[in-house]
Length: 359
Image 1 (spheres, rainbow, N blue to C red):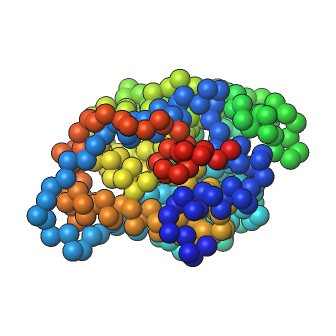
Image 2 (cartoon, rainbow, N blue to C red):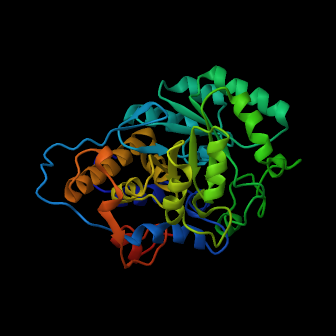
Image 3 (cartoon, one colour):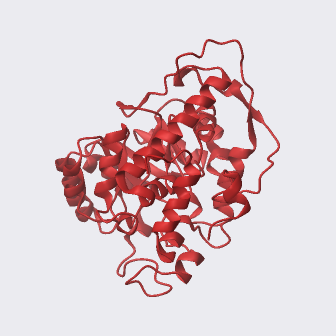
């Protein structure tokens, strides 16, 4: 594990360790997987315009988000069913985030309890909220999250209905019947509206984020309601098929937000150069999902820490070669539209994996 020299080796190790069902869950997207591929294509449509003759002997990748220091501007996105990627569920992810120096996001859809995950590490943590009950239910779970020491709440709003993820349906997780895509009972998530947000912000009592925003008007409205961060996300292409890419919408969302809150972006982040492009176009930080899962599956918490270190090394090299020495120097002048040269998919950023795509 400590001998991994590239994230390609991480992915290969993850595939060797995962069942077909767990692999399908991690890499799949909805229906034709067009949204996922567009996320990747969006990054490939930008090229760097480096500055030269800059002293880049020292590179600083650190930044902050929500007042917390980050070793690099990359956080761990919430992943449901983490127990299929790590025996101890979200605990391993929390420990890896603390060991590396970043923020993890605890999904309400994964074991163990939010209290157990909070107690497992001292690093900053975001609690991801899906509405699985009414406001009284939300008041209780948010009180628990606050009491457990979570530093922020992230309300995911792009899942009022569960999508059709063909690969996962054809390779279901153990204990889940083929075609099953969620819990039984009332669909509370479908009833959440903008009118619900002020009350949820009040109930949270800690910085509140909305995850799943891609429309500039929604970003503007979120700022008006006092959110701490807008999380630009299309669920990694795992919800609505045929969507626009998150990076394509980022400049318009930056304009709509107008500096009124911080901006997190996910969807297609696979390399250090991707992090740099997102920062250049206005994101304060990015979140990784698939890459996070691959790291954990490859070698547990240590494997995830190693994956983050490899991503940091790529980002550090890209910063030096583009001619900046700190994150606050990254700006839109460093990128220009360029012609993509790759066929986009979840492994298209690794030459060998792109040619012999792992299934």
